[in-house]
Amino acid sequence: MTQLSTEKSTTVRTQLPPVPPLVRAAVGALDRVAPELVARGALRLWCTPARAKHPAAIPGGAAFRTGPIAGQVWGDGPTVYLVHGWGGHRGQLRSLVEPLVAAGLRVVAYDAPAHGDSGPGALGRRRTTLPEMMAALGTVIDAHGPARAVVGHSMGAAASALAVLDGTPTERLVLVTPLADPSTYTVGFAHTLGFSERTRHRFVVRMEKVAGRRLAELDIPVRAANAGRPLPATLVLSDRADKEADHADGVRIARAWPGAELVVSDGLGHRRILRDDETIKRIVAHVTG
Image (cartoon, rainbow, N blue to C red; front, side, top):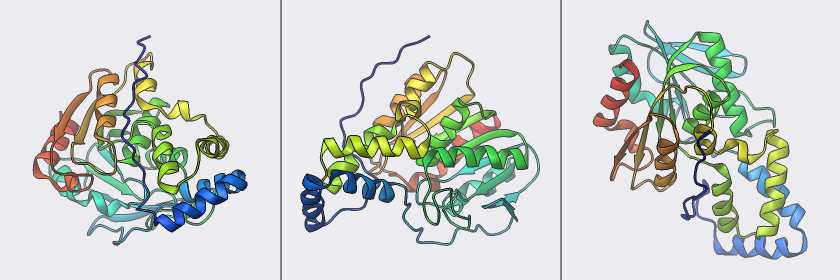
């Protein structure tokens, strides 16, 4: 098997908004006397997606509900599944629906557990995990038919890639501004909140228990490089101006994923890339190729 370098980006990233200095100072003080309490609170915050600012639904399409998962379907033909990111909703991928349908494809977009119109995850209202997002993709595919392609954005791209690496079948895969390895983001998370490396370790142990997996199993480049079996043709789209996902993550995934195509843009950022005409054309061409 190919062995991938363990080199990772040193850029500190987090999915949190800026934390006020007083809050960070309070967390740091509590961390010195009650690290378990801080680790428990950090895990709860980590598993709680931010609320979406806009409605999840996309005009048109047939609404569906698969268990707690809500979504919509458009068109006829081979099926493409759209997977939004952490704290997002299916409406963020609306710009892809019409071009894909026009290309003769059936499109399925849904909200992940504890997101948008979908019901709660196993942790309860407004809380979920990356493995739960991975499982949701498999559940929707089981209900709506084989995947011609899966298009994922941000954490949804990570969930899609990991689901495929776990055995969820698809002919083609598109990863838009993907996250490569959650362990690197726990460093930024701890730095932003102001707790110590000792407490971060406790936090990771708790996270692995909740997820039912070691974080090492969620490192996409390492998993892809050592898959030992054919993987679907994959397009990775990354932007140098992305302030939420590290641009280097997309590069690492593309280098490790056998035969992957990497397209790097400059200035589109984390979300505008989904509405970029050239990006949409590339996605449609890859899915139909």
